[in-house]
View 1 (cartoon, helix red, strand yellow):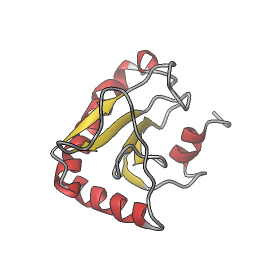
View 2 (cartoon, one colour; view 1 turned 120 degrees about the vertical axis):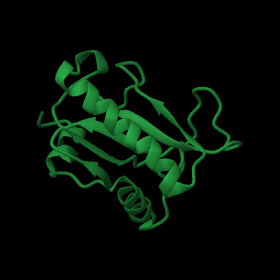
View 3 (cartoon, rainbow, N blue to C red; view 1 turned 120 degrees about the horizontal axis):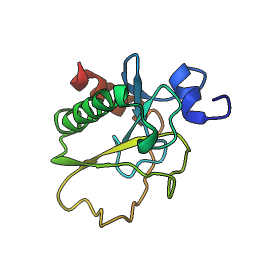
View 4 (cartoon, rainbow, N blue to C red; view 1 turned 135 degrees about the horizontal axis):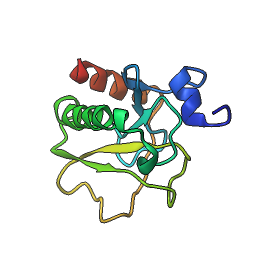
Length: 136
């Protein structure tokens, strides 16, 4: 879809700090992370919501999400992760995306209030590289 920012990232037409790529999916750092290392996982194919995800992509999508959740612990020292998908309501970009957010006890995340943070200059590259290494 030509006007979808996530399709542009998937195709390489838009920049992103990519941490995972394969034939079907791309994982990249959220520009406005809940916590540093927050990754968005998207199908390369334009899919609006989880109910629209083709059956042949379901297992691969969840497998990639599992790998990202594990990488948060190895690469970032997180104690766990928060994993979520919004469907239509609160979906800031109309393209299916799985949030994988590193978590530590006492990090301040409460319920569905998602505080946002920012990366310092070039800091996102370091987070992306650490996650890529853990995924290899």
